[in-house]
Length: 289
Length: 203
Image (cartoon, rainbow over all chains, first blue to last red; front, top):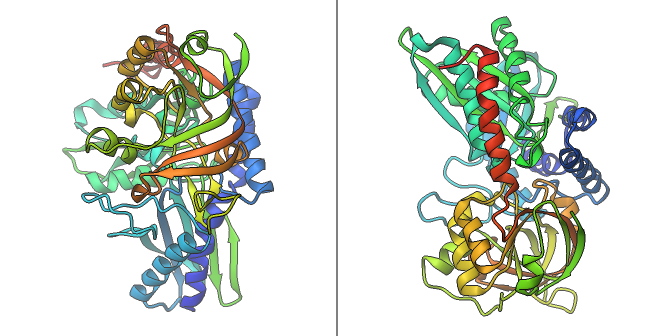
């Protein structure tokens, strides 16, 4: 694997993600606008649609929040790569995007609040590495995770006796608590099971999944549909100004858990649900969502 | 519900005439302010050379490019993308912004709480809601970065923008105790019970 290619892709992905929304999100906004019954809410959704067009026309960022940069790397079958050098290349690409575009560096040291103006810091960009069976391909998904939605993240270690009802209650209460602060309509990501850290990570994975996808687990998929309808009955509406469109969907990801545990986590993605993907093969780099 | 254009700075009577549900387009000048700016102004004893009396502040930290100072870029910054952040984190600064600096308008997203509402009533102020996450559009409403203070806090400096027609923005909190957020939150809490009952998830 050519690491110069990885560095270029890491740079390009950050900028692309900040400028162009994936088609599923654009369709999601159009759908919510079509179905909205509240006048103010419809006008807010219309402004969001206009903004997507202005960003494309002016080749500008959709939102000023450059977020916390997250890179999800998936290494396919037979791909030979030096893991440490791969992570270093991604970090260089992230830093170059910030300096060369330039982008606002939103990353600071958590205690001193010092901003290095590189979008990098201790353990940031966040880099997750996983593996799959795709022959000869390395894919990188880039998510600039906005802070408005990230600041509304929740974990509850419920008990087995409270069952699935505890999960449902928690999701509803998190959406009520978050109100307009998450820049709704959101994708409500729910993690269920695992350990505390795994549960929160699953919630993030759920929140950043494409619209229209369903959980691979049939019980989880049924719960997704039930909760998606329920949250849109709360009336939070776009930007918390009231209306039907509180969420595009509720997504749920699960992991097995301990006999004594019933963990549930919520992580939300704002309406500017940005993500970009690069697939690197021997033939070169292909960009998508 | 009316729409009006407000050239800044504005006086108390102009602000008190605004009601929740009205829409406003601002012209002339706008100040950008954020968490670190206000932490330094109000917790760390720093001051600004800017006169904010009667003005509007927007909760923002922009994307900018450093350029040589010129007539077009008097502060040495060119704007790339200027948008609005979540206001709730800065709730405790609304009252001192108004009392100490005479600010009359706060622009943000997601709304402010009871302490800010009290400040708006006491000093004569409003909260104008912008659609969060629509910074590409918002950037087209800003003509120039005119000046900057407290720039060691960059990007959370205190910015002075020259604006064209900035809006329309929704009056979401007024000087008479009105708040769209308070109304929606009360309705949402009321609906929560019915939603939980329908799920079969009542405690």
